[in-house]
Image 1 (cartoon, rainbow, N blue to C red):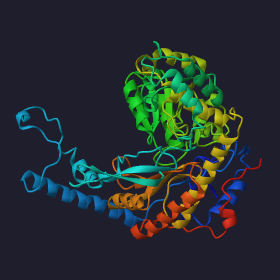
Image 2: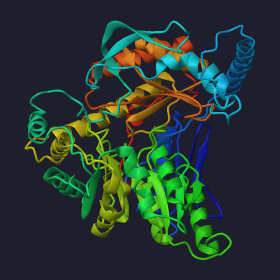
Image 3: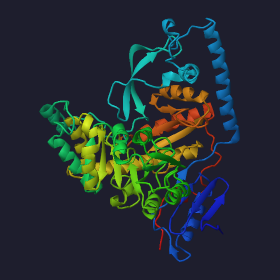
Image 4: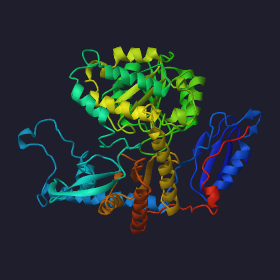
Length: 565
């Protein structure tokens, strides 16, 4: 154990890196699966008792383990080679299309408009024409049932290499759903569960046909907002009809010219769009990197605005609870500590974390045992854990009252429809135990069990997966572009529906399959998926991890404990 000049304590070994500071549990945690993991945790236990007179573990109340294992060098080289080969053949096919040797299916300018400003940028569409089209059949697959733990899929085929599709009229039944954000299993069609929703549909109909500021505020909206505020433990809340717009339309109401936004580099597009629309200055910090964030905060305080050097009107930090493409969890205790130190504001997007983490499903604030008042703007969506649609902004009453007047969604967007509001109320009351049952708590616990089981088994098989051990978003790295289509097609042949993601949605060398674990998944379903992955991992050679499972299973299973004072 060595002490650095900046008072960090590091423990490094082959295959993993752990960094920690006095006064906090982990400043930067990027632990890769390794046989020595149990030894590392035991040594950390001693480290966090007392160092330099500062009681450690004050920010974190449990271990915080995330995995970001690097692939072997040959994988990165072959990935670039794969894209290079695809690019060469793409230019060859474009040449053949230009000379009429291959049919041109791509959208092109009309001859009558040849002197106009080009509507289509040919080079920008190169990737779509020559790479995406070859594997386009793996996206936009239409389902024809509720997206529960299993769904029915409409079969389609292509006769022109994925440029167009036709339906065969056949339905693929009982496909295991590993792609939907149905974390707590509330996407369901049980008539008994949906009694209240059916009742509200008959009473109010399907739509409001008005905005919140005109004739679009119903008693159901007021009931839902009061319930959301109670659920989160804050003063007030406001709900919106669209989750994406909750970010993109409300951030411009909170900040503007003369303000500074500090945004995590992996933030969702809705946060990025909202930040750009606001007109505020945007600066990016490295993902979950507290040193990078603190440097930006310090520079913002010291230097102020460019040219004028005036102080920023506001400094707001934008982060997510669970990052939907990495499966990582925000290091909230340290971010709160930094925002208090530098007098900044914090905007927390809990789209994927609300309902999915925390002892009772109240998100990362509960997960870390923190006070909701420490977060200035609490945002979340109902599109995932609650099996509905829309989103919310919650916090101090003054904040919510301001948004009721200035939010673009409140002024211009149609209100949330009553049956959707009732579905959210039903799910939230279930989580809070207000329905007289413990079913909600059981769902949260089952999700946690399924998540840890699924992640542990994938580690044991030798796959590289990203993210936190408690995150139900599980990215499995595929890397090479040629394996994206092969993976998704073969999984569907085994009646398993998955989501695959590649460049430009991910870095060019980090194509992946993203699994979303649900409380509704049975152990049999997960084992079916894991067995298929084990077989396919061998066939496609996807088991890139260089670290084997622990030789001490009893310690390997132990993934959390409380630190003593």
